[in-house]
Length: 58
Ligand SMILES: [Zn+2]
Image 1 (cartoon, rainbow, N blue to C red):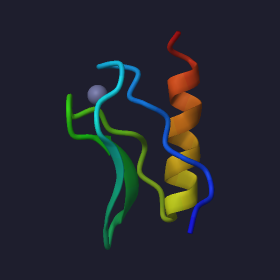
Image 2: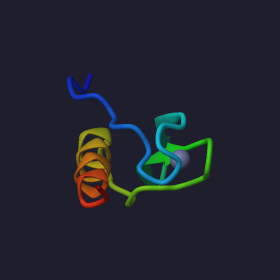
Image 3: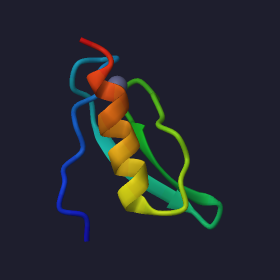
Image 4: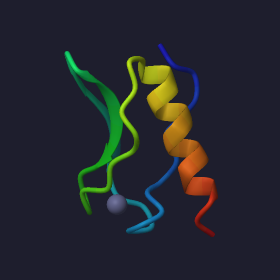
């Protein structure tokens, strides 16, 4: 299991962010405003790239 936590959504300032996945990949998604992170083959990478993306938004 990933040890890092998903950061809050930068678009709606909080939201409900979870890792979702299909057989085509895994990505972070905010169910509050429908924001989505990049798709990855692994949950760890999806989580990491979501957290990195949120850093770019103050
Ligand atoms: Zn959101």
